[in-house]
Image 1 (tube, rainbow, N blue to C red):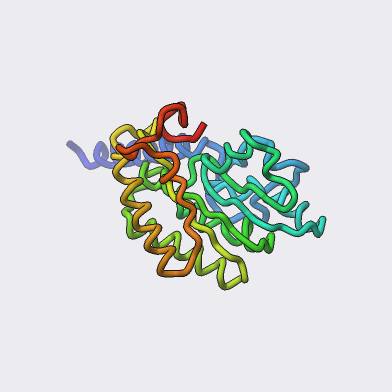
Image 2: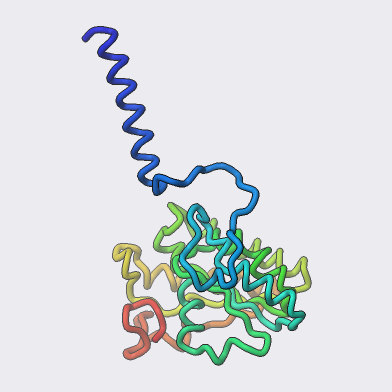
Length: 234
């Protein structure tokens, strides 16, 4: 093969790689720092995700600004994934009078840690209820391990305490399976992570809210009638 052919093949491969990258990025996202991540809008949390907002930092930004401007005191922020987010949908009357829901479906502990300053600290609550873990088991943000998960949780404890906020650590619920990741050994992983979360809470003097104890049967899976998909409490 001649040198010109090798150059042509190399150029073609680079062009194909660039095209695939643009396709995966949606074709219109320029991955550089911008002056304003979130567009101005009245109800950001009710609209579609912002393009390029990988960690959903825009999800509650407008609502946070309104809440801070109102001067309404915040008693507790519930930070978590879909288990927390859907709690608001199933029982909206709970989240009023200073109880604020900041759950986002699909997020793992590293994403909650990234959102902690704007979605918790900025609201100056007395308490933060932290619920996470199922999406770490599923590997939603990539390969991880229990030590990395516990480090993220402990970092959030540190941030809360440094800002005068009392953390409450929620256990993982009883899990039969994770719908989008059926080979994650979810039941066993949840039990093992809960054991370590309880030990962390005891070591740090943090309240541990053990939902697993009241949701699980003898086999560690959800008791009948408490979930429709093996993961989310019904």
